[in-house]
Structures are given as structure tokens and as C-alpha cells.
Length: 346
Image 1 (cartoon, one colour):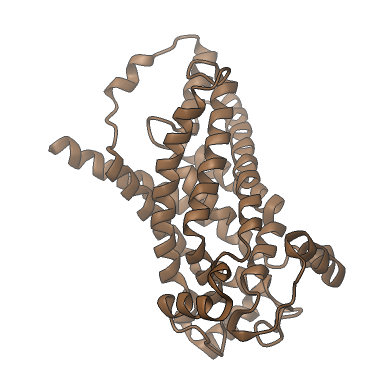
Image 2 (spheres, helix red, strand yellow; image 1 turned 60 degrees about the horizontal axis):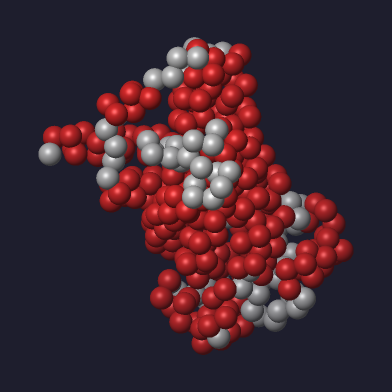
């Protein structure tokens, strides 16, 4: 959840029309130099809507594919202890669990559920981009958040627009996210044979509502995840640019983006863990473990596993954040440059 929100909105905010980093950088430069240069934007080629969505979707899919092994390890650690036959990894390490996967399931098992991840990533990114622009335009009509309302108003619009677009995208694509979790959590015994079979089996066994188990935890975490990520990113980036104004903007973006991702993951990881547990409720005909909703699930995990139980899998999540952010930034910028060149040729 955290990484998807960060990756989707990081890419969404890098376009010329509403880029958080670019806008903030322009603002900081203007404040320092007191020499605004609004005319420069007119000379920068802008991507059309379709190429923009394509670049963002492909960047997200590439990033998720490259970090899929760490994502699967995160999920397996998150659900350990929930069912003895789902995950029996007490007091184990990332290396030992990775070795078990290779030995028992084969190397390809690291990418279990990756196809549905890509199927989820593409519409999620597209909806995020589209909704972000629409919400941003609507919010700029609110008194106090006008387009020329200053840097504080710009940040507020991005935070609110980002949170709302994340909630919209998560709600519309949630069944695919749930299926991905269930496929990735399967070890030796495979109850679900693929995306279509998983969707059918969940509806058959648990009803249509079963496709939305854990949605509350997802929506509750999307807003704070993006808010923390943006706040940390903007603060670190601004301070870095003041202290070292000649450093590469790409280096600054990657470093600050990775650190903001770590901060966001730390803050919202318990919600993500609860979401995964709730997504696996009743999977494969197993008995339900949690019967009291989101907050009851929090309490149950805290009582039975302690505070440490709410952070199971945080280490592979940290390992996933840094390369994930780097890959999505690199891929997005590369595709944007290629597509911009193609549009210019036309």
C-alpha cells in the first residue's frame, strides 16, 4: 500500500503541470535569487495525457517487477502466525526464508502474484494521474487554495489532491490488490490457480464483499502515507538545496524520495500489516481469525504478538523502498524523454 501510493504520486507529481518537486524547486530558487523566470516553462515540451499515463503506468510496473521478491517476502512475514499452514516462519531471517522459497518452490516463486500486481498497477497509476489532476483543479477553486495562493496553498492542494486520488484509485482497483496478496501468500499448497480463478473462488466462498476485505485499513493508510511522504520529501529537499545548491537534482530526488519512503513506511506499516491479515481472512476455506473489524484486529495482534507483531516484515519493506523509488524515477524520466522526443518528431 505505502509503496504503491508513493510510487503513483511520486510519478504523478513529476509532470510539468503539477510536479511537487519541480514546483517546489522553482519556488525555492525564486525565493533565493528573487529573479522569477516564468517564461522558461513555455519552452519545455509537455507530454499529452495518454503518453503521460503510459509512462507512469509502465514505470510503476517495472518498479514492482524488479522489487517483487522483496514484496513477496514482506507479505509472507506480515502474515506469519496467522495460520500455521500459511506461514511458519517464527524467528527466521530474510535470507533463510528466501532460501526456503528457492528450495521448495523454485526461483520463479519470488514473482508469485506479480502478473496481478502489474494488472493492478497500470489502472491504479492511470486513475491516480487522472484523479490527481481533476482533484487539483477542483481544490484550486476553493478560497485560500487558489493557484496563486503561495507555496503553502500549493502544498495543501498537492497533499489533499494526492490523498483523494490515492483513495479513489485504491477503491476502484482494490479486488486486484486483494487477489495479489492471496496469490503471494500461498506457499506449498496452491488454492488459487490464477487471477480469474481467485476472483471466482472468492466470490463463491465469501461473497462479493469478500473482494473488499481490508479496504478500510487501505483507505485509512493511503492519506497519511502520502502526507508523511510529501512532508518529509519537501523538508529534506528544501534543506538539501539550501546547503548544497549545486548537487544533482536527480541525486536529491532519489535520496530524499527514498528517505521519505522509509519514514512513510515506518509510520503506516502497522496499517499495511492489518490490511494484509484482513485480506487473508477466510482464504482457501480457512477459519476466520479476526471477527471485530479494523480496530479489533489491531488490538488482537497487539495482545497476542506485541508491538513487534505490528512490524513483522518491516526490514524487507525498507529494502524494497529504496530501489523501488529509484527505479520508478529513473524509468519514468527515461520514458518521458523518449515519448517527448517522439511527440516532437510528429
